[in-house]
Length: 136
Image (cartoon, rainbow, N blue to C red):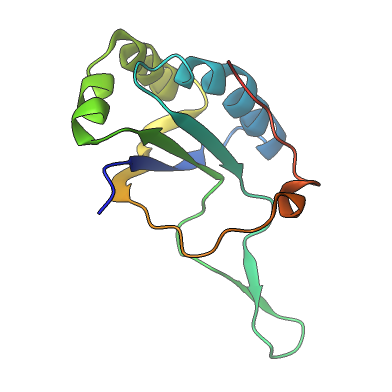
């Protein structure tokens, strides 16, 4: 088993925020704070653009989940102890304030930690059309 782990957060925006404002704050305000977490090896944000699933029964669609999801993120660390140290950092205190008073509410965020396994690797051409922002 690999030691690398990822912390996944599933996010729901405040009802009063438009999806555009949520996305902008998530990417431009919250994201740069996250990149300062000590020991962070990789950070990925995912912004939901569509969340219905065709029923195959005519024109009706149904939600994929009873819980609306507006975005999720993956934070990669070298191991559990590295992540635990990072979660106690001063940067996490700043993030906590952003979560409480910024783009989402603390009761609307769900987190869990995973070990990951790569089952198939696509060629680099697969990602050619994707928007990738590198933060150093």
